[in-house]
Image (cartoon, rainbow, N blue to C red; front, top):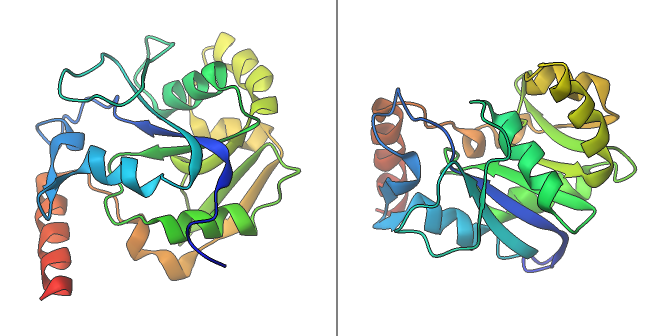
Length: 196
């Protein structure tokens, strides 16, 4: 199936983390002279709509921006904000700290998932990838109810939803998370070596 197939969903790129361990906003980091925010934006080209979600709109970002709906520091904030603002049934959430992700893997998640579920979430080496996943608008009411109870752990909320988990151990590299500068250096070296 061609990679340029349009996915009937909106995509939301999360840049709201404090990046304490990284030391600076991750979305500004560059790989092959391209900012991660721009890489992510281009990677989501197959979606009908694209947005960026964060705490405050950065002056250096010209993409459509939505401010976090909640005053909490958790990925759930981005998921909740996306569903609250989206006009589409399905919504893809991706964190900007997954620099090796690509549009082909995103297509696989979409195609392999059960689209009658509330969420389609990859599982890699038993690790749930909740910030590279699809969420249906129907999950909003249940998420809202749980948020009102001051429960903010995404994995716990996924347990209450009808979640379709996709086993993607073969894509472990694409799900490499960039938490610290050391991770960034390893990823930069890896992408440079792959191009050489």
